[in-house]
Length: 370
Image (cartoon, rainbow, N blue to C red):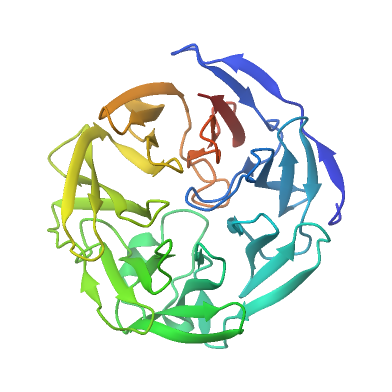
């Protein structure tokens, strides 16, 4: 299929068997479909269109689905599309996505595209760029090619990549000026998940990537000029911290914390990036991913234990968690480690949640109304 062509998704409404909540399967269980990584902007401001990836005719491409009728416009064509790493700009005018070693910007009206940045020879992009809230800047991680441990589309290279102690660097890109510089570099540490603080493009949150029981500490901050490198929270090898994200106003960032001896629970925590003051908010089920809505009144998370096969909704003010629906996913790979991860995300107005699951045999995208 070609860029600019359209397909039609047939919606399938149903009620969740556990909670009775109204749900809709947005894609058919005939090929792999999923939405982007959970903290990227994937739904337009009017709540009408969803950016997602679909595997058809042997390749994965990006599409824009009309959530009113299921019609979807193909946005990309050709090889080497990174199907989880794409984000709409704040005004919905552009889609920033990754193709091989390039970061692309696609005009959502004309479908014309240009190259914002190309990773230089000798380096490999991690294809996980973070866009600033004003759409002017972008950060990404690059790894020295000689230190890359080849993957097989599963988790088999995760610990070996950490053990390789790769030479990594964070690139800071000025989109308007088309200039870039190295904001931070480490010779023997795997870096990941770079995110620019909303309303403060000078502050970068990133992580030391790798198995939680082996890394030194997960959470790190640095300024765009490379100053004020700081470990946000020290941790032991008995502790696990995961899937940090900035609150939409940039006031704090959130993460989940667990101790290896607690088999069923973890805690939601917030941290001030200036003072590094931590607030332990509440205990919750074991989420693999979680994120707040735009005004931080609700949090959604995906339970990862077999007995916690639910999408959970948290009332932030009341500090209460409820089961929203079952995601029922297997978590297995279909060529990419993240294919069947739920990655729940809110609509801009907070009236529905999108998540991915292979509960019907193949990863599909589901919508649950709030």
